[in-house]
Image (cartoon, rainbow, N blue to C red; front, side, top):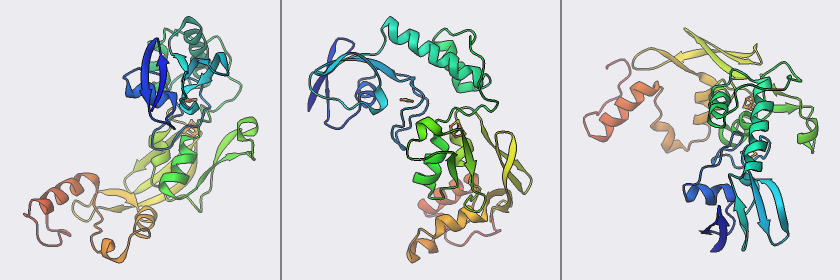
Length: 264
Ligand code: SF4
Ligand code: FES
């Protein structure tokens, strides 16, 4: 175990943990926008900055989401300097994305009433990379990428692009985007993935086998099924979330014995 200090309190953390994880383990709140535990750190929004002192560090301002704990590290999460930098970061982000609920909530929390800055681009994307990473690392489709990116994406990334051929229309990118730069628009059996206000891909929704409501794309079902073994494939049902909840609850309690297609 590693001993560090956060806001004057000695903390024990496991080797390999980040300062953000160690702080959250102790119930110490640090705001984040581009971090999700399931996807790991990315280090672009800078909202999670802390002041770090200790061996090799003097008053260093660093993102806690990718700063690993080490012996003797002294962290301050809420000094006046940190507060001021965080407020400025929120203002900068708000300038390009004034309608984002996540950002407005953070602005209220940190006492930011308005942004002093003028946006330098028209779309609301803050290039947090959550959509790119979830599509690549969790969904396995890799349909989204940074346009203009190369080995040094932080310098050259300008916007997000979508590869229509690779997109399976699952909508996870829209659900994860903190500023609604990607939206999912479902109208009866028609699904649109809208990126920066333009339709980026379009799908026909398939109907739930029980209630008949259109709920997902065939491409998404095929993608999930392709990762299952033969035994697992036998248990696959095309069900909307609501019917799936009833179906599996009934199956688990033994009240359900037959294929339910159309019989509910
Ligand atoms: S589209 Fe949304 S999730 Fe993707 S990088 Fe931009 S802000 Fe982040
Ligand atoms: S959460 Fe750490 S930089 Fe965004």
